[in-house]
Image (cartoon, rainbow over all chains, first blue to last red):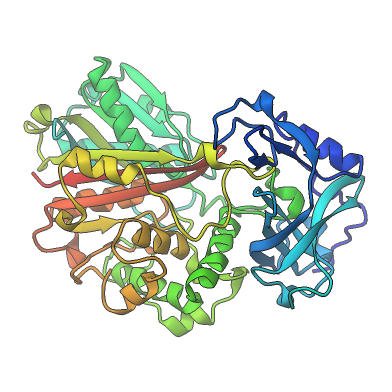
Length: 143
Length: 379
C-alpha cells in the first residue's frame, strides 16, 4: 500500500481524570505510578483492590520502569494510516515489577524475537508531539 | 425460578442481505416472533432492544409493527446483552409495566461493510491496539505460553464449529466444513489469531418474547422455561493505565455468573444437555470451555480433538456453529439456538432429549468485560 503518512497524525493518547497524573509525569520525563498506603501500586487513580482505600489515598511516585512481557500481539496491517509505514509492530502487556500491567509497544527489536517473559524497561519517547511510554528489551538479559 | 418463560422466537435469514436497514430487520424478526407465538400485536406491550452494530437502531421497529407498547427500553452491555435483556424483561414484568416483552437485536453490519477496529479512538489506539480481535489475540498468545498450546488447538474449535454449521441450512456457513489445515493456512489477522479464529460479520436479526410461565401456556409454541441466570462484570479489575479491563489473561473468571446460574436453576454442570457458548473468537470459546469446567485449563483443544463439542457428541456445544459460523447477532445468536434445541427445532443437529441448555454471553463494554449466563429448560 502506497500511503504517505507524512501528514497523518499519530493516534492521540486518551487521558482521563484517573490517569492524568501518569501522562503529566511522562510529559515531565518521569515514569510514575500511584501507590496505596497498603503497598499496592496502580497505573491509574482508583480505589484500592486490596485494602479498599479511596483513590484520594494514592500517592503518585517515581517507579522502577522494570518489568517483563506478559503477552503480546503482532500487527501486520494498519487499522490506522499512521501505522501503515511502521509495520509490522508489536503491542504488548507489560507486567511491571511493582504489580500493575501496562499496554504499550515493544520497540527496537525484530518482532519475531519478542517473547513472553522477556525483561524490559519502560522508556519515554516523543511521538508526534506527545510523550508516551514504550518498552525496550533490557540489554544483556533474556534472549 | 421457572416463573418466566420464552414464548415466541423470530429468527430472520442470516448472511448478506443487503438493501435492508437494521430497523427493517428488527421489524422482520418481531413479525416472525409474533407469528410464532400467536400473540396479538397489540398485546405485545414491552419492547426491549440492543442497539445495532454497524447501523444503529432506535426502536422504531416497534412502532412499525404497531405493537401495543407500554414501555420501550434500550439495553446495552455489548455481547452480554442478549441474556441481560431477559433479566431486564422480567424486571419490567415484575414491576407491572408490561405483560409480554419482546427482546430484539438486529444488525446489517455485513452489507454496511463494517470493518471492526478501524478508526477506533479509544485508550488503546495510541499503541495501535485496534479491535476486539486484538484483545483476544493477547489472550491467545498468553494461553499458548502458559499451557504449551498452539494455534492448532484453536483450529480444532473452528473445525468443530464449522462442522455443526455445515449441517444447518440456515447457517451462513451451511455446507462449508473446514479442515485443520485450512485453518492453519489461513492468513493472520492479528498474530497469533488467524482468519478462522474470528466469527462472522453478517446481517440478520433475532427477537424473542418473554412472559410469565402462566401466560406462556396459553400461547402456541411449547414454552421454554427460564430456570436461572447469572452475570459478572470485571469493571473493578482494570488497572492498566486508562484501560478498562485486564488484558491478556489466559484464564477467564466466570464467577459469580457460574455459581449463581447453577444455584438459581438448582442444577449442576452434569445436568446440562446442550451448551451454547459465546464464540466471537476461538480463544474466547476455549477459555470458557475451561472456565466452566467442561475440561481443564489448557485442555480445550485436546478436549475437542477427542470428539467432544460436536452436536452428536456426549457434550454437544454450539450446535449450529453460532457466532463463528452461523450468524453474528451477538448474544442473541447462542440464545436463539438454545431455545430451538429445547423446542426440538435443531434440525440436522438436534440433540436427542435436550431438556436443559446453558447459554453464555460475553461482551467488551466501555468499562470491563461483561458476562451473562442462562439456563433454559424444556417444557
